[in-house]
Length: 150
Length: 421
Image (cartoon, rainbow over all chains, first blue to last red; front, top):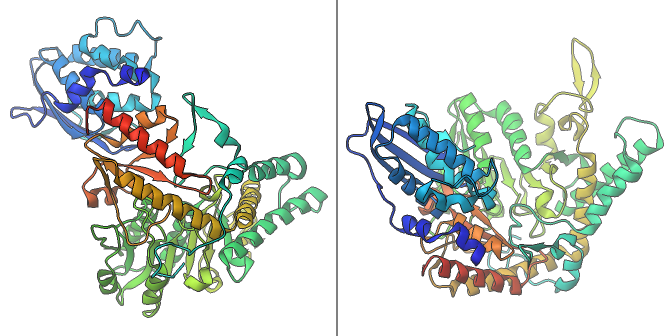
């Protein structure tokens, strides 16, 4: 079970049980929907963006523990970041879970997001971890169309 | 088949020597994450016995050549092997003639062929196509496409909370505008065995032809297309121990004769000029281009393998493992079956507490257990039961009760990791 604990860390189980910033966002001015057609996971990300900064964020949806926890931790990591910062964070997160630049170095400075580093050992689950992030990017770009992990 | 009163699908058969059967499948000796492989994803694709693997290799090593063309020895051999496979498949489903067996890429292509060629020729605006609420996407989308093109209407037979079609609603859907009915023999998401013989007779009383999606039917019980009296029966090789990329459309000769060709190309013609083309006879009219020769020959070997085991024995064995699984898993607290049909074949679909199916799949994989998790290409079924996804364990001739125990123990690991369930 030790291997699985690397994937299902306590932080992830906790955010899955009690997702933060879950629900609609009253003053949202950007929203996007994302789907993972492989498993049917659905997520919507709502943003309030003001002067190029994310001042409010929430998400809704259904999915596995990895995708719900990832969305939840993502919303916590975004508040008061600039939109450019948020995009940059997505790139770093993606590199970390997809292990694009080798294991180990990528999680430095990622804070709570580092809990998802274990995903890189489960290639079939990378899309679970990145669904909310892809949806975030679509919301930042102001895309109305549902994004897909495919 | 067709004995609706019995709970077991096919009645008792000669007992299968499972230990010996398992030795026929090289992959069952593999380990996954250091654990013996417990392969319970047979409804997605079944494993291949050595005889199939070796038959395909032998074709490539000693017979490889194109068919229906050369006058040389290899081409003659390959053509004979290919047509022998057609004969084996014809006997397997008890079709009347070899020319009623059309080789395609799989059940999906078989259904697309009928939707395109039969639907294309017979549907007009306002006509209706009847399917059920438990279809695999492959028996929904081809009909949606042709209905949209023709302005026809897709009608859906509802299913009840157990996962059985509501027969009375089915009867009401059949009407003067119904041009074809398309039904699954066995639901891939629920395991429901539909009373297709009865449903076909109902449609025939109104002169409506019926296509049966047999992707999950043919691997698990004797199929007799003449006894069923179905007009079309679609199935895939790879779910019945044969290679991927090949499948069969059975169609009554008169219907196939009247249909326009599916694709144009070599092999499906008699004569071609730039002015006009005369199409080849059945089944070649529907087999344009060089087919999956090795796949078809491998499918023939798979049919021989299944026939050698005895499809009744396979069916009885799977029913026994299934009955054990239903009983054993019912004792796992927090587990809820999705679909509890009156007659079930070869699989169970379930949810476990509020743990998502994908998480369960990953944890079981660490125990060497392969199950399918997700919507099983049947999103409308998931919507009907109000779940985003299920875990599906599906059984084949080589599965054992002991493997069901491993699955049940794996679920206890899920419970521990997710703090209760």
